[in-house]
Image (cartoon, rainbow, N blue to C red):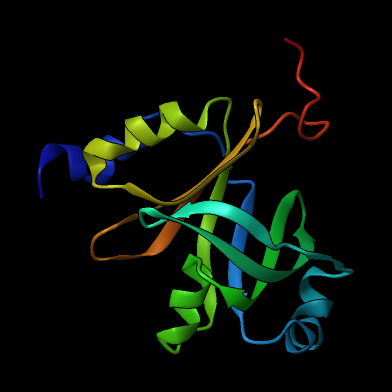
Length: 161
């Protein structure tokens, strides 16, 4: 393991606190029943994403999402319903469970560059607005993905220019 890839070197990057843990599930209905007492009540939404860059191509993904809470930590449950995304890969590998952790950041592209020396590469990326970007990053041999979300507190398009 090189110096850039050691856990100690990752500690000094200054990442903000994790604000979300994402799980991929086969069924949102099953997730509600299984996890409602722990993380509910849930908010459900269509989380589909159109025209995101996914592994070098532009692709749509059809996703259902539940949002719950554990204190201040958001718990996200994602059901892949079609299209191409990291969630599809996860389900097709026969997996279900913890998938990613998310950090809210001021500049997703800067954080992507900061994690590159540690082996992280963006695999799913979308810029929704001038002030709103998400990116999922992976590194070889690590099943846990990292998500960066750049978005003002009031939602897309609400940052001061």
